[in-house]
Length: 195
Image (tube, rainbow, N blue to C red; front, side, top):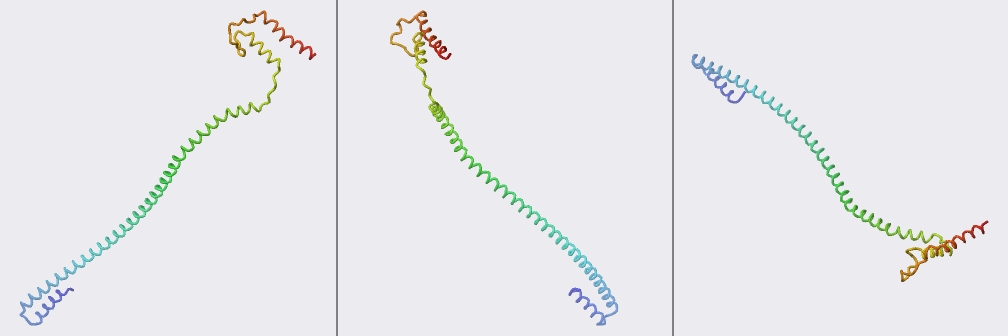
């Protein structure tokens, strides 16, 4: 009981004991009884209110625990996302570095390929000349040179022996026949010698 109800109850009891008149006693007794009923009702209300407060506190604690669990879950999810973003950032940075290195390296490779192609293009004629110079040269016979010179002399447009005067008389077809006989005669002699 509270302090005020104790005082009220004590006053009622003192008034009854002091020997007041019976009407007054009865009236005081009714008042005391009403006061006790009110006090009991207030006590019941206080108990109900305390029960509601306890239930509310319990729900608040449960809601707080649930909110903390959710916050811990969200914090864990946030940490996981941060790690993922960090890994993606690292991967992106590595790709950027590789791309920068490739951009630096590609012109060098292109220039190297161009220079190698130029060296091959310049060296190929030299290689061909070297191969031609290394081949054994067979001495050509005097006969082949003589035939070439005679063919050039009798041709309408000589290539080897162009004189200063193009109006010089040329040998006619009949004059070149002995030459053909001469060129054919050594062949006949060569075949008769081989027999």
